[in-house]
Length: 403
Image 1 (cartoon, rainbow, N blue to C red):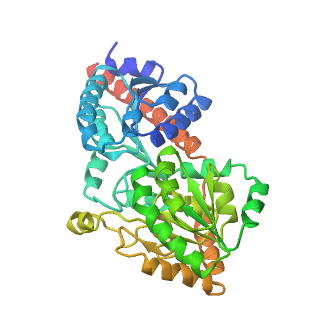
Image 2 (cartoon, rainbow, N blue to C red):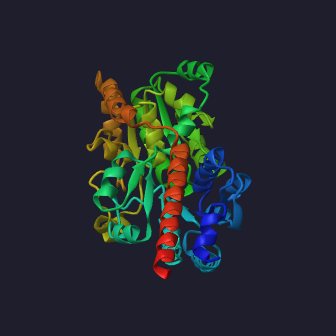
Image 3 (cartoon, rainbow, N blue to C red):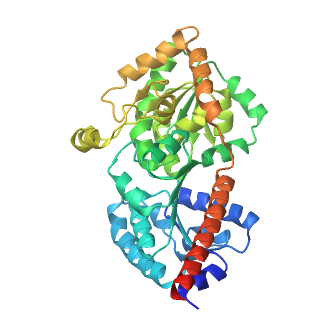
């Protein structure tokens, strides 16, 4: 039996690659969703603990290394070794499909190895080439059969560049839709003072260390102007807590700490100071007025970033709105004075916060689509079906030609 016909007659085998903890979570949800429809599909690949528990056979786990401190440079030798290992496996084992999730630095080369091995590639959570490094679009088009994208405008963007793309919804919306909100906690927060200002410094240590000191400066200025203000500071994990708590101890603001309580914090807040990233989308989901902050390297941006970044707007909410819907101070700021001025303007001008809340709702609410994993699972199984039909046609044509 030929390799082609052997693959067509066997149970589907999918190579899957997820290098970071967040991708491991999304990969696990996708595997479960596929198995809900077809338990016979087998997954093998680069998988973290969640994907392994969902039934993926592991070649290597990169998630623990991705979470370690020390920067990307230390991971390069390991990543190169992994790519060599996976390239060999992709050429030796019969895979029906390859799925790569996020992490373009690793997964664009991984997609190339899969394509060169004759394996079609589905990219779940596509690289944000529309924002920066647009030159990657050519490589993406050459290496990928189809995209499952998580931002609504990406479907049209990638299709316009000749790549089949389908909007499946953002995985964040699934977790937010399932979230149980404790109404008593919301009441307790609101009873502590007014206005209520949330502070979300992000879940990554380096982001919190860059952004939280500035957020704290803004908070202190708000406290001085509005003594009854209560600040809710979100703690994402142990790493960010170690950065945040020592700074809070020195600051003179009325605050409470909240771990795993973003739903309550955002439900109670009148305004939020939020680090750039997925947290802005989470804040927008609750229709909360916000000021987005990120304080990266001004030198790095001036030397390289300004030439690579293609968008005029930086925060995800503003990109989705197509205008500066919420104030953004990024990719860096030299002083918090303009941020303080904007925060006080929003708090002091009657109707400003209500107007922003209404505009955020009008922008975000129509875009909320749940079921990202289930929607992607349907794409996976439809793609497997099409590929099987194409293979069968190819085999039939070869038989006719040979006879």
